[in-house]
Length: 319
Image 1: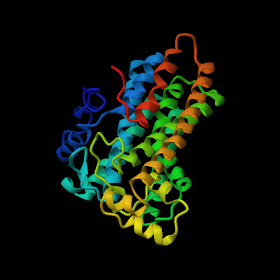
Image 2: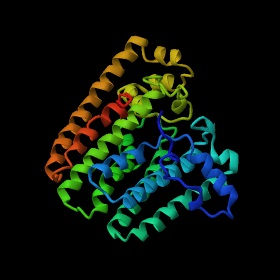
Image 3: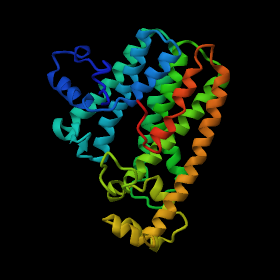
């Protein structure tokens, strides 16, 4: 069974003021039930790089605080009713409390990192938070735009989704004051690819592809958002064809709007093939990463390699 973020000790209620009971109750709800994948990625990096345990905890807590703050804001902006099978914070505690709770997490991130004393780590984290907010603005601007391109969406996903993956694999090196520019260029490329693969796979869930977690079918489309697979399918279609596609309420209607289930399967096959190219690029950068590692750190390569299987193909990691 996967451990929750609470089990990883990333979230501890004692870290927050007891005189703010509603805030603590909101965080209890927010942090329970999450997979804590990003914190586990930090742990993987930290273990193989022999990072100080206090620094490891700080980094794991930082990324989970940023990620959960983004969820609080995303759910409100998207008017989502459910998160991890539970009522979202803005509905349960009011929109104002959800915004304040998200802002407070981001403020605590900067306070905690400042105490670590690594100004480059503080600066990089601030840049990532800025990227997330820019991505949110851009994503909101394409809601209702059914002619958005995959390239436009990639830019948004690089700012939002990929920025957190990049942080997870770069921050441990920064915490150790390893600043080689080529190293960080390689890590940046790897994080970008992981973010793209994860987001594209997540977008496929909307069409019930590898949807083991039971995400709502056509949820993005019904919300007026044409995600990456939707943009790939509609590329080259006429306005009249796209109008028919985006009005689909069920998968059966969607299949019919693009020429049938066989046509859908063909587009999916092409989409998967395109993303296999991203996986090959990731593996290329992974081999380059070897040249920057110190003796004894080589196991990190073996542990980073399966991430594309987990993030894109949604295959469970071997125990």
